[in-house]
Image 1 (cartoon, helix red, strand yellow):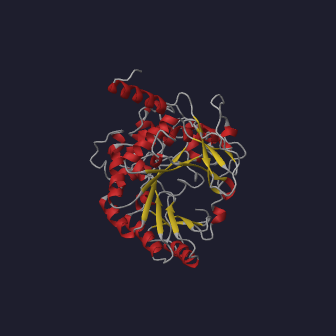
Image 2 (cartoon, one colour):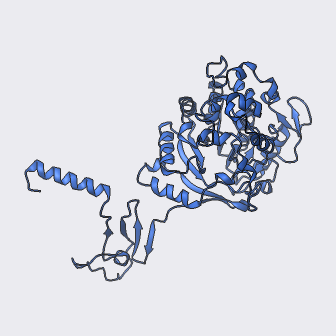
Image 3 (cartoon, rainbow, N blue to C red):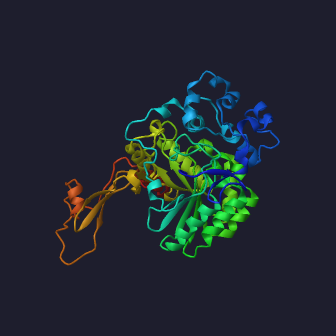
Length: 452
């Protein structure tokens, strides 16, 4: 974070940020065997999360060893110089086609479009740094706070809302700064919910994560701890038995992860989520709506269905933030509404996320929903369902009521008839469930021998 010096573990001032041990390895120190075996999942240390961290693709030279077709893309190095790149070997292995048509490729490989920014974009549009009473602690909502414990991630998403710091320095919060954050929490007992984020907290050593959790849990007024991490998606081998056993000690604890596309729902990711769920940790997912990646109704439907199978509750679907470097990912808000309209009635409510816009200027998360209220009066509210059916929902009776005489048989009801109580519903003619009912009625008549 801004204004903080970095120091290696065991050195520097007590107020300095700490460099994780895996981050000390420079790209040239990465395992040479990995560079000789790109895309090979047979490496003897493939399932070692520390090996994955040390062998992330950080340079264009490494990227072209994995994907030789990119050797002529000199523009990518220009982008990576401004917005650093890091891709775990595991996540790179999910790329099927090394070009922007592949959703995994598009989410992790630099794109020249990142340098094209309209003037309304900002480095920190959510004004997090202005809501930091203590460095690293964002206090925006009355009852909760966000604690940023590291600037490092296992993979730097090209759509990251914190591109201003992501990858520039991979450091974690110092004991001194953690103590100051805990003191602020203790002095503000209205904060009952703390979200631990970064960077990605699960890229830190297990002992460091435990120190953060123990410090927060020691504040009596903190009831809930949540952790935001993308490691189940991009580094599933990080979810070790050692980690989950440690996390068990700090319930009530929640984990929100960040799956964006069905291609990320691998066997390894499912196993990582299962280990967390089996440790009694409820899992939520926060997706970002990304142009050319997941901005179709069917893609989000497949993602949500897959998440539920993995015991991960779709929590938020975010509109892209107004961050410099991600304009090419942004979609119109109407696209998100279209997707939400599509999901309602097609998947269980359990599998439907809340579509939100994280408002600029620190306005917070604003839910955006299709309009299901058509009209209102003192006597009835007209509601619309996912099929387009309009229903009149009577309001509680309060003394004398307006005329609710029934329609004549030759009258066709409209919205006024519904809102006035003269009709109860307007049915779409071709709704699938009515077609099912008709087929069922026909089948019943055949069974009892009645003429159709």
